Length: 222
Image 1 (cartoon, rainbow, N blue to C red):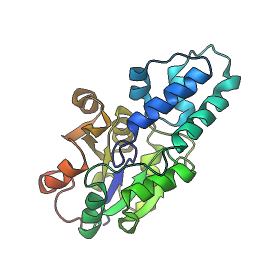
Image 2 (image 1 turned 180 degrees about the horizontal axis):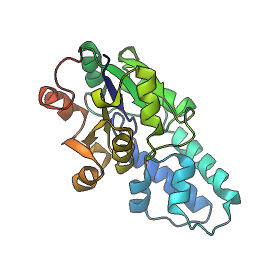
Image 3 (image 1 turned 60 degrees about the vertical axis):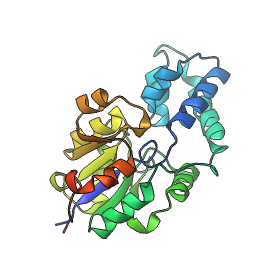
Image 4 (image 1 turned 135 degrees about the vertical axis):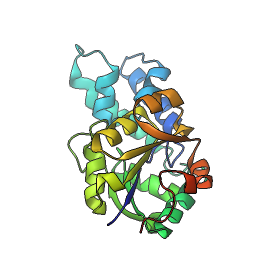
């Protein structure tokens, strides 16, 4: 029976969270909203519509929401050729694929943004499928993206692991019934990840790779 290793991308495999914080902050500023960067950081990992809804006054005029998301997309897009992988991100995916795991990405990114992230990570040969923002109606923390990733992998939840860096990742994975592994490289405190459902914590992909045999992803999947 197959086992899936499902990975978030932003902040988990690619060092992009603080780029998102900066570009969302500027997009909000341009629309006349002063949103603290620490609040934006905690919201990174939500889809664009959910992030705007989470951070702005629910009684606001929503007619400008689409332009805020478009501004963020344009601002973030200026970094697309400079996105950097986190240490050993590609090597981790390739190692897991070599051990028989079905590797799937579950990300709120899509389109050109996702293409840029894939180029940065440089491990497409290890990835079986990608569950992107375009594939489900509800994003994290709903379980839908993780469940869709499992469907693409053909693997049951109780034999699969989801690796992410945000509270939203841990909640989505827990609700989908998979074992959750949290990485601290996204900047979220370890206690928050544990409280949201992380069964194990590692500093970054390199740390997880170095301790792979003792992790929930240890051993061969076959």
